[in-house]
Every structure is written in C-alpha cells, then in structure tokens.
Length: 199
Image 1 (tube, rainbow, N blue to C red):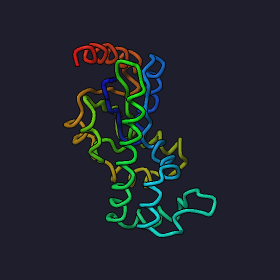
Image 2: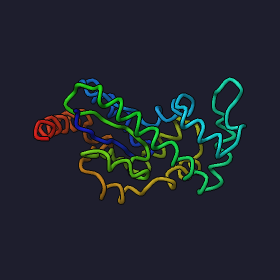
Image 3: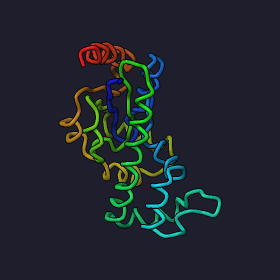
C-alpha cells in the first residue's frame, strides 16, 4: 500500500505546478477537486443524496449537474454548503481509497484545495503546504481567471489562513519566485521515499 501524502495551498499558490513536478518524478497524484466534479455525476449514492437534499432541478435531463442552481443555493447559505460537502467528501474519500489501492508507487499525493478545511488531511500520513505571498497569489488569480481583486479575496476568506495551515502541515514548499521549486520538490521527494520505506 502506497504512503498517502496530502498536498494543498491557498488559491494561486501554485500547488498544481508543484504536483506536475511530482508527476514527472513518477508519483501519482489524485486531484480531489476534479474527482469531486466527476463524482457528482457518476457516483449513484452521491447523486441521490444531492437530488434528495436540493431537489430535482439539481440535475438536467441529460444527467449533468446544474452547477448554477447548486452554487446559487450553497454560496448564500453556509449550512447548505456544509450539507453538500458532507455528501461530497465521503464520496471523494471512497474514490481515493479505491484509486490508491491500485497504485504501485512508494507514495501517492492527494491534491485538494480544502484539504485542511475538510479535515480530510487526517486520512494522510503526511501533508504538504505550498506557500506563496498573498499579493503574488492575488495577482496570479486575477490574471489567470480574469476576475477582480475583491473576488479573489472573497475566495481566500473562505479558506483557512496561511498561519493556521502552517500549524497543520508537515512539510512546506515556498513558491515565492525566489527559491527554486524543483530543488525543493526533489529534496522532499527524497525524504518521502525514505519515510515510505520506514512505514
């Protein structure tokens, strides 16, 4: 069984770039947020839970998710958002368990934007935080998604603070455009290979 390692970072921190470097080193990455989107259409248990809670308009006739309908409900109501997450997170966990059991590498990565917020970090042996200065993150997201600074800050406010995340992570990668990411990933890769042999 591969060692499970979580990886996260605030929006715009560059965690996807870091994951791609790990993949180049032969480490499989489970992208939890992408998987969640697929599961909301393909996982029968999850689909039924969403329909029961949010009503038939949650899905179009072709079976695809009515994202606007759902987001209009959950982003105005924290209780409803928590309810949706309480359905989605167990489905993602089931998919992760199934996926990781099929991997042959010494360790695997689970990439998730809300790794700490969802408490799914507790299912991993170790967790990595990709850190990046706030102003740099804001600029990256504004350029990437063509959205306003206010909108980026709104998203950031729904995530744990960098300080809180640092208390929950085991390893750190600084993506500040001063320290080379590749060297940091290579060093961490070596450590994780040793730790996977010990476990």
